[in-house]
Length: 130
Image (tube, rainbow, N blue to C red; front, side, top):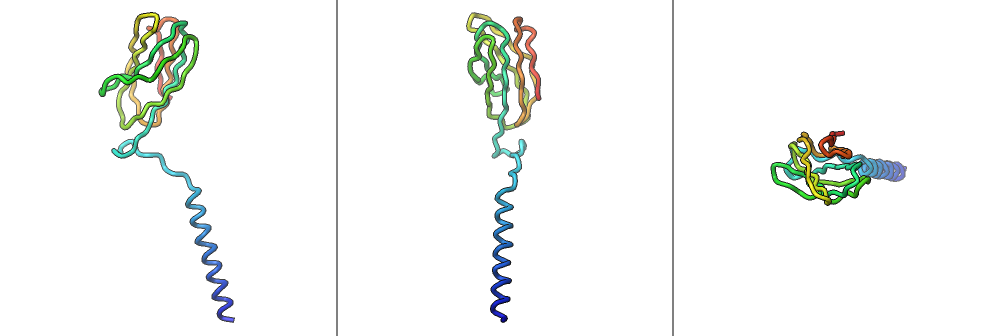
């Protein structure tokens, strides 16, 4: 009789341990801290080009310009940019038909979504953080 109850306790213990491991594996992971030098976050940049001209877009930071890509006229594009810290960013719009425009600076941190709306007149470009 002792061996049967001991086996039951051991079986119940194993089931409890298995459940704890399963619940731990299903739990959400926390996002990397922007203050942790090892973690790399990213920014999402959503561009709505309402202008008829195609353009190339660059992210300009204290580390210099970084090409994001090309956006066709009257179209939208979505870009991802690796981002490690709190910093300012602005965007340079180079129109393939000629001319360029620099946006205002905006403070960003890892995980932010930046929306850029480019109307017919690029001087009225709106940059906002979401």
